[in-house]
Image (cartoon, rainbow, N blue to C red; front, side):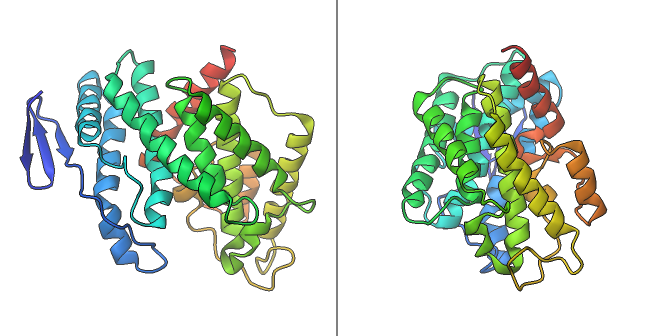
Length: 309
């Protein structure tokens, strides 16, 4: 395959317009500067938006997705530790997206090269190691810890990696244990006005992790289901309060503006999701670049793997 670089895009022989791998920069937190965050994440968002559309498209589109993955894998982008905490936080999403896209291609009978699989495995291992080190420095699990477990578990859809499997198991046990008797999450309570949103992200990550674990033949026991039910009750009670407050916090909670963008809660129970919507949560379409494209297709693949067990 011959690649021609034109500005920030790559044109392949097959005329796939591929966003060029970006130089490594320190990604800026949106809480520090929304503009700088948009600028530093734009190359990654452009890449995954394009590849996610290709992977859910025609055979020719899927060939472009493979070409794009080959290009980025060859460049080694994202294989080094990120230059900022925000970069590692984003890498959870990028690793998960890559793993899901490769899984979708395989389900369509399209194989990527060993180099692409090794690249996806490398970035997944790198960011999970980062969050494993971070876990030793913070007191209690948070939603980022759980999302890192999702990325580790998502790689198991491609290939068995005992290290990543053990990591996702540890995250699952830790995340369940982090649910307090009243359903709150200690670490997320420190978010003040954002506590409810981040607690809901925690639940969304837990449900995604549960699904990927089920695809590996790992079941959820009664105690784990009871803990998740406590978490759901706390979220619903807080979301539907007027004014919207979380138990034990003096702060009025921010509106749940970004639940769909940040969490894609497709594994929420239908009745729970409906109640959230009646209390102000907004869920839009099912396309999510950082979840590998159409999440309903992703769910069908995961559910099919579960049924095959």
